[in-house]
Image 1 (cartoon, one colour):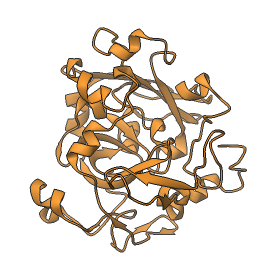
Image 2: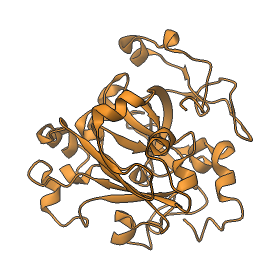
Image 3: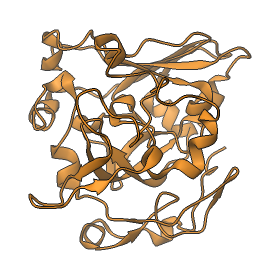
Length: 301
């Protein structure tokens, strides 16, 4: 069931790409855009978002499989083969198996979601994603009773992903969510940006997007999804658990051990752009705070 998260825009309202890039103020979704929206018990909050350009979004990336420099992914990702592409869904599901990307897309409803994107390195941008709700994919596979977590795995193909030839991280990259986080309407699998197929350096052909968490939680180029009753390992937590917790929710009140998270630098804002205050849960507090009610967010960071 798509469209659990709604706004007032339809495809008839979609602005042509060129005009969209030039638009100064965009009112976008719950986190976006001045649109009266209701989601669960939370009332969507008006916000003014200005999406970054396609060029910025696709040339300033963290995707260590292609290198650790911000421009390495754009330079090296052309080597990645994305057709054919298969996603294995297994574990505690009714219909385990290998699903082709085309078969998945034939059963999903793609929507546009304009989301804030916040990196743990304290920079941010606004991205107009195209994708479908992860809940629809999980429901297609049939989540069994007792499943509590969703584990994700990225492609491991060092002949096409030169960063994997170095032990920067323990490859392949893995990530995880609690099941209720994965089923939340804000959580999507993105397949496009600005209405175009998602570029390789941004996680083609299909990546996770969880807008209230730091960007490294939104694992790219997903090839495996596993439903489990145990908290799955995550790459950055394995690399340094003190600095990268399992939850990694955007929280201006809990600093990274080596830098403040109270403010952020907007990518594309220019060299002298002022930093802006970081929003709790990246601006999606009304929608997701209830997921963590009663939890000590300084402990479960």
